[in-house]
Length: 228
Image 1 (spheres, helix red, strand yellow):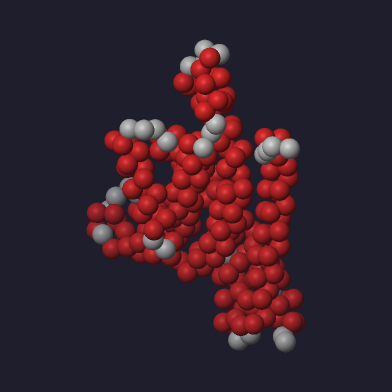
Image 2 (image 1 turned 45 degrees about the vertical axis):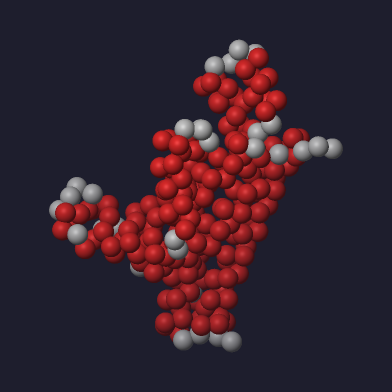
């Protein structure tokens, strides 16, 4: 095993890990901002409101994220109207396209997670809020969303971990993330095992940190709601 090459390229791996974390945080925050209003609308009984949102979530959950990334980064660039539009400086950027793809993808999954948690709320909580005279907006802000977000934590933690692993696709569009660092080391030294096992160790450590953070969040916000 050529460990000397790995040690020599540790700064490259660390920079790649930092870029991976940036992609993850941007995608999760943007995806959550997308998901919160859509989940509320998705849980409404009106099909005219919920059906378009269902279509968005169905498309992004039903197609591979790699295909979505190719369509956004390579596919849109082939159209002349896109190249001449004001959006082209954004869509010609691999970083923006990767963040957009990841945010839309995780936003679709998160929408269904939160919408399911909203639909699963005990009817007694809603009736109690109505009995206290809360308006729909106040009830949504104080009762429905906080309770739904708490109950959605276990499923959302899995989505965050899947999103961390999904960011490895960014290397395909020339972003030097953690997987991109491993591919660079492999192409330079021809050591695929050492190059990619090092990346796997970094991903594993980041996953452990994520799991630990979500366990603490669940212990604080979810366990008090569970039956004893």
